[in-house]
Length: 65
Image (cartoon, rainbow, N blue to C red; front, side, top):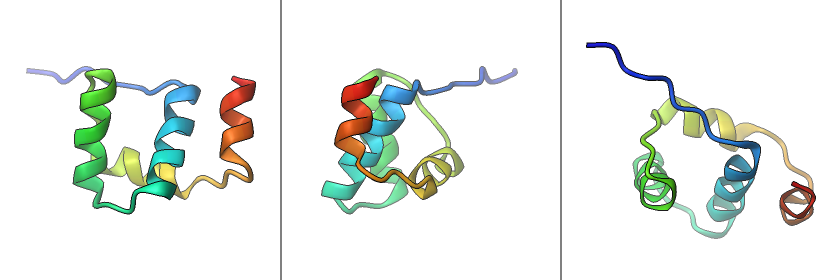
């Protein structure tokens, strides 16, 4: 059985970044939040990669999308 690759949109990634800045949790809790918000399940490494990306002003980036 092969697993289908799931990708988040740039808007979803920015929303996750903003959420993570305001709510310090474990990677597993972020995965649960993503599943609740967008009905997709991603890997811990994906969350880590998104959160280590530098965003200067996340609210502005989200508004521009």
